[in-house]
Length: 376
Image (tube, rainbow, N blue to C red):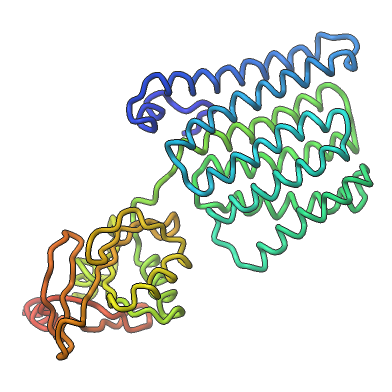
């Protein structure tokens, strides 16, 4: 269920039961909403809208600033790369939003910088291809010089702006980060369409309030997204298949371990788990780290002997279990398990299972005996 203000219980959880910080953040979000409502209501009460320009700018800045401060406080407790890139983007948008009321060309560089920060933060939560990243970056940068010289709608400015909007919003909407981030993308897109219709068809107080409402709705959703991580709790066979394919592409030797490996060995194909366990050759740790980076895995905890707990918003939790083959020359190894215990492994522990149209290397104690026992 969506909420424009994070629930107080969620804030307490986010801030480790710090009621003071939770109350401040809650009140900042509420204050921004109240100021926004007052500002837009006043639009219909003044006779000369031009005379209301300065109060309107001040109140818009107060709205944005209160939400950004609330976001900044939240980021200190959830310092993901996306959140830290989202903050400067929001600041650029807020300043550009004030400048645009006086000069569209002067606000262009600010919006352009905001776009770039937003694009990079999108990349952290949306798994897209490199050519799409190039399109996003080029389109957003090219928009700036056109805005400096043109202010029309169906000009290169308008066309580039619509292209950027479509691509950027599409990426946000397909983000795996969390539902608030996705909904913010969709709302931004509707806001852009409403703004275009306002410029082309009808420009009055009502259309101004509608477009402003949509824009600020998307903004507050972005801010609230900091408090909603939507952590991936389940790892699926599809995640496993993709991770193993990426390991092959990077020439990284890994073996599926734990109960997943046992289930694979027993041909139990439809199952899910809270985490995945992959064993690796300890001598290839550098190669493994590069592969983890390509899969967008962050090392959450690293234990002695090379054992690591990693997390990816796309693939979930992964334990990498180091196998040390340097102890002996007969192909045996010593593995550090996810329970931080050590086991000696002979060659019989390493086997393969045919599944997903490919051979999956597995590490299972007594693999052949387990197969025979299951058949019996």
